[in-house]
Image 1 (cartoon, rainbow, N blue to C red):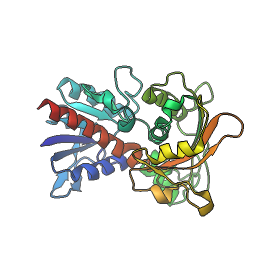
Image 2: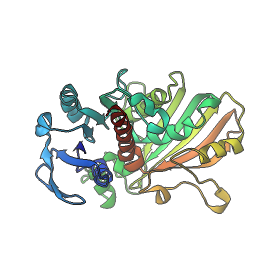
Image 3: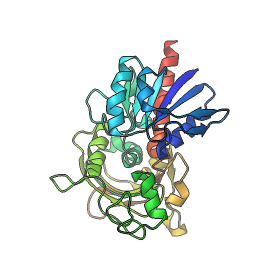
Image 4: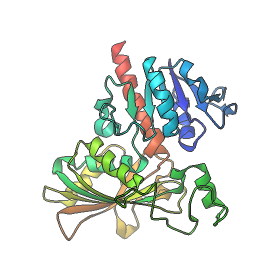
Length: 325
């Protein structure tokens, strides 16, 4: 039996992860949060009381999975690691540290071996690197990525801003209304004119793919969709492009659904991918201006882009621990 603590268990991503792990027969869950401490969550065979994060330093667990803020991860993860508890963190706090693996298991799952702190990447990064990894041996040299990110990526208040069609004066998550609108900025603006979200996509992609020299131009926008991010990718390659071969590579990649028949209206959309673990890839074309391939990918940002990826990281650790028994 593995004892797993979920930190931020009542947030959008924490709830998804709780549902996934609650269906595992060899797992016992302990739930933690700050604002919802004391609330009761119905699990598969029992009810669980959500504990305050202040109780984390004394928790008895094999692994703590942080689906919370940077501040919560920074405060509590080091304390648990010192006690020998493995931590999987979904915040951005540890992602770019050299000694912390940033993991998408189907891409670089071997990097978790022997590590007690593992970072879960940003949602849009995860769905971007999975199909790119299928083309890695073709020599990626430059990536242009334009994201169409759903409102749920900004949290519960953001969803309410959308669902209630909130306008100026009533907004809780956004500077501008998101209903019937597109906001061409996510995160904080940096001195170079790019945002923190765009830097995440740039730096995290390089680290996960082990392509430190990959040239990346990223642009991130928020769109009025509740769940699922879309990313348009233009990937320049060293090798000569064969679109049929690239489609075959996508088709044979785990966790990728090739949805690529535009004439018949088949392409990845939020309505298709919501609630699934897959990255949908479609509109695969050759860039007519230089040696690059275009594709559009869509994935559920709460599931594939966060909770399910963290779950797959945990499975990697389970396999490692079982080999040591």
